[in-house]
Image (cartoon, rainbow, N blue to C red):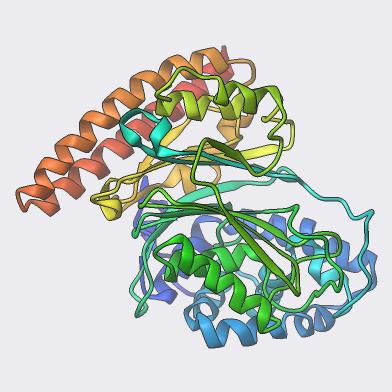
Length: 431
């Protein structure tokens, strides 16, 4: 008997919440075509070129599965549910999510460092709250990679001890390339960490380590401890050239840089000024340092589109403002697919994510438009003004004990704004 389709996957907004089975089923049904495409083009085709069988691919994912079973068993059930809903084999899908990033699946367990290995160099940045309007806590990441469908979502798992979080990932993998969680911790995981001296290819890559941090950590210090645990236990697997370069910002305004490889972790606090994980000497970075103070949110966000920071490979972006007093509801994230495109605002407190942000529709619409940055900036100033008014209205409702009304307000505004933005992109593409 064939499995009946969850009709929620066809709704204009999707509540990515509940049990691992429920979450996985929704994700798999919503992103079925993308999962098939990425599985073939990014995983199976390269494997065939190397003469790697599916049995070998599955065997190379076993360490990832063992770690997940110990730390995050809900991921295993969720992945099998994604695979079942998408119509792919469960063990093969697990092998895909375990090994596709940085080409871990192409390598034996350990090998020599490869200085010639290609790397997509993402950029994360922040600024001290003392330099921002209203002492706002701001964070941004631009993701650079091979073009593939991008997804943004708020995930609320009912698994014990798992925090809700908002993240950007590939539409084929429910991981985290950049995130902010309900405790007010934002983070990114990029290339250009410490040089690898003893590369490891069996274990867990930063895409799922960052998801684990989103689900478990509440501050920069806790994020650092998780990374240290992964490295000390030999769980971290990160490729042939460099390890991972992380940036975390929390609700206290702490900014923490972490660099690691498979055997070592280094960290540094950045309490003052502007910090860029990469490209700190570019005109774009200098534009933020020289911006009129206090720095407004829109100014901070717009820097990400500077030509020295926003490249042909910049497939997505996320700018976060962490709410100190109510991060679980009023923290905001602006997501851009691709990075140059119009921002779609999300509140941490929404119960439903616009489907177009999950299933790649926004990504496709954004890719179809070029040369409209000034138009985007004008539109975003108006969006930000409306967002701030909604935030304060929701704050008043929360303060007076009307949490359900506040959540409804946030959901309604986010859905309406997403519809307006998507329509605007489609109109610009036709112009």
